[in-house]
Amino acid sequence: LANNKNDLRIQYNIGETYLMEENYTQALSSFKDIEAHWQMMPQIRLRLAQCYEKTGSLPAAHNELQLLAHNKHIAPHIRENATQLLADLNMHYSMQANTMA
Image (cartoon, rainbow, N blue to C red; front, side):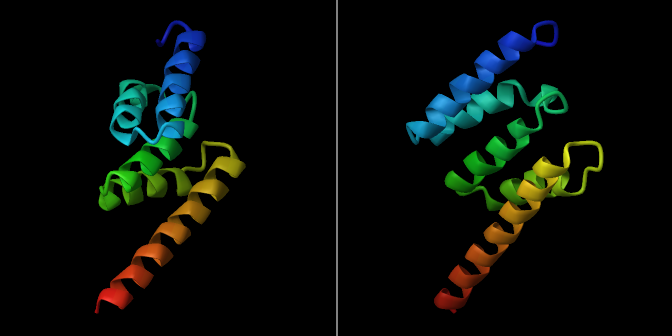
């Protein structure tokens, strides 16, 4: 994958397909396979966060979003997206915790 960006894109698209099919476990596996290349394609971390959230791994989702939100070396729109998703995640689960209390 490191030698061919097209292979990275193909693997990413496979993960996207699993996401669209709501097969979050397979999507997570696909994105984990290319996780080491996330700096070439930061969206990988966004998708990992989404998969973690959908599979109930909220701390892992939070960690992925934090990593992107505070990384000054990636595109501003990715950081902004991660920051917004992080805020949404925090709000959603704090509201959920309040209704359970």
